[in-house]
Length: 235
Length: 235
DNA sequence: CGGTACATTGAGAGATATCAACAGGCGTGG
DNA sequence: CCACGCCTGTTGATATCTCTCAATGTACCG
Image: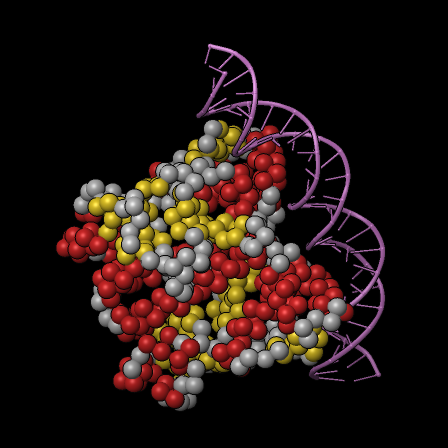
């Protein structure tokens, strides 16, 4: 039933460094120990798929480490990335018994896996945990709504600038504030996230660099003029 | 505290015809009676705003009757409609203490209003209700994800066809299945929902009609060739 | 050193936006 | 009851942004 890569988690949940970011923030120490018994640690390397659209939802996951892309494919191969997952994100919520989207590791990833039924039993009479899951789901929904505005009503330039600003913001709880942003996803991933083509994304990055608002560095971007980027995002 | 239009609800919740669609489906009769004491009935006429982006979230709402548009505005007036609400929908979930979006009545609307704090107290120790809210939030999220694909990766023609198919599907629980679809929202609303301009929406409707796949009727559309519309939506 | 995947750059095409005019329905008021 | 004005929707002509197609450049890895 469990993938071959499953193994008992390497450290107690009470030691988990990102616990406060996760669904587990709602649990006390005794509950954490109980939950630890239901979970396994899993690792995936860059490019591997953790679960795919239309697959049965057998598990929930807490992302511990790494970055994932969450995406939907159309029959003809067009892809829309609906979000990127970072440590602390809870994956596997679905409206039906099948996944609504696929999830790949962008770089090496570590996850806590919970069997769906066991987790459901565990959460059944824990209103605090249910409220916490709710909170995370509503936060996701809110991000999705912001992204709809971006996709439907913003120009390419605004899309890229907004992406940079929001991505930087999302990294703050993980890596702290910084003008240098790690951008682990490819140009194609960014394009599929923003509803653009890879060429338009590339051109826009280049233009921003030529205008002196960013500097493109290996695997990331440095904001030379954060205020200008914010202005481009707000317009 | 309550808006002037508030009034005790006119019928007992146990008689509510759309209860099974709402958050209340998780409650038994005693709970329904208790909840009824926390709620007020509100009415709004076409064009009125029930709550606006950035306003404090003081209430939750169950939509009883009518259709609403949920939207976000950019500073320069561009608008993205993030969804339409139908009877049974639960409104007011927010990631912060302020609304993420605005909500207008498209036509005459009736709502059950609950004060946020009273509802929170009521739900606090009711895992069934919390799970039900979760279920509705996850369903919303799933719809939002589908809509992101539409906004980011579909052509104008696909967008309009997909809109018709999905809107018809959403009306099924309310009005039953039919090839004639009530379209209470304006062309501008549809455009702002699909990330298009009103002219493009109008032209696409006209083209569909000229091609014999739909017929435009007053306040709605009749699908003359539903299979063709589905094909246009799927492509 | 060569291959492969990813990214950049350029030229041209095309889908949708923009700008503008017109039509139809509906309520209001003369 | 009819005329007018307003609002919404439709249609046309043109502009423009982004896509498409193609070539080139670059970094990493065997």
